[in-house]
Structure formats: structure tokens, C-alpha cells
Length: 168
Image (cartoon, rainbow, N blue to C red; front, top):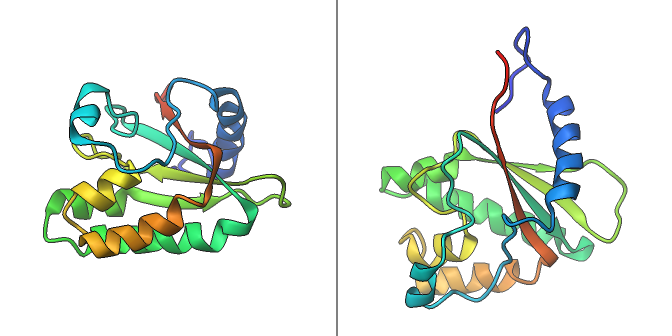
């Protein structure tokens, strides 16, 4: 989370700058789309674009305007399931996700940013991995949540914006 400490940037200024960066990076290499759960062998071959080594990360989600309620309720359920987990790494994963909706008139997409504070360096933020591989959800729960969530994303889906802190 960004604070308003002396010498620091306000959250609004950081979010405004990141919004511009997101537009530039939308088609970049950090882009991932919500897809059907990948086969284990295929997932092992590719690096996970939603597993991070940076200390500061924003995740940019482009959502269909008529699916915002499903998106918000799905992520609320995911966060709650992670936070109530017996596994400390999953509890930390859920607690690290802070969700923000861009306060702008509706357009072809509704934009959400997740600030990961601090991001897990051992767990993936990929919703399919969280739902189907983390152990935080039964298969039946995961199928219901995933069924709603996969319909929410636009073709651009999810983009990541790894940040590096500069200055004091």
C-alpha cells in the first residue's frame, strides 16, 4: 500500500501514473488472460506471468461493463477463501490483494487495479491456479467461481505492471 508519508507520493498520484503506464503496457509481455485451467505439464513449461519477484506490483484487470458485479463478488470470495485458509502462505496471498476500481465513467471496459502489498514471491496470483491448485477451494467451489469469473474479462484480460521503487 502506498502511504502519504512526507517525501512519498500520494496514492492518487501513483494510480494516475500507473493508469498511463497500464495503457502502454497492456499489450506487453506481462499480459495473461483468464483461461481454462492449464494441464499440469503445459503449466510447468512456461514461466507464470502472475508469480512475482518484484517488491511492488500492480495487476491491471479489464472487465466487461455488464460483469462488474460478478467480477467483484468472485474476487471477494477468492480473497475470503484464501484468508480463511489454514496455510499461512495462502492467508498471506489473500491479505496482499487490495482491489481498486478506476473511478471513471463507464466505457468499453471497467478497469480494476490490484495492488499487491507485499506480493507473494512463492504463490501465483493466477485465478485458475488459486482456484484449482491452491487447495483453498473444493473443486465444486472452484468450478462455480471460475464459471462466473472467466466471463468477466475482456480480450485484454489481465496485465501485470512490476514496479521498482526509485528515490527515498
